[in-house]
Amino acid sequence: MGVFSDQVRDAIYKKLEKACSVRSNEIAEHLDALHQILQDNFSGGSKVIERSIARRIIRKIGWEFVEIPEFGLLEYFEMVKERFTKDLQSSAMLGVTRRKLPIRQTNGRTTYSTFGLVG
Image (tube, rainbow, N blue to C red; front, side):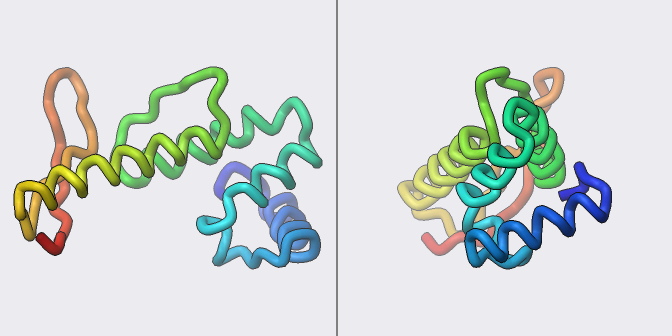
């Protein structure tokens, strides 16, 4: 969570562990808990914080971040999950064992990354 200072990040980690029994290395599997902690502690500002976290992570995987005002952390990652699922299903239907999956489209050009898949 590079959005926060070290102090704030550590405080959020402690709250997650105490209130939800979620350690910092388990956050990806418990985004709902992170969402709740951010809402409880930052109320109206939580959407802005969640969007910043989503932007940072989506860009790290090489995708272009598109801001959708009504989206928060859970909605962005549901969208990411759907995209990965769709790409994996398309690959499986084609019987592909290695496939270049599109990860970013910019100015009509697509950047690809190769993922190993079981076909």
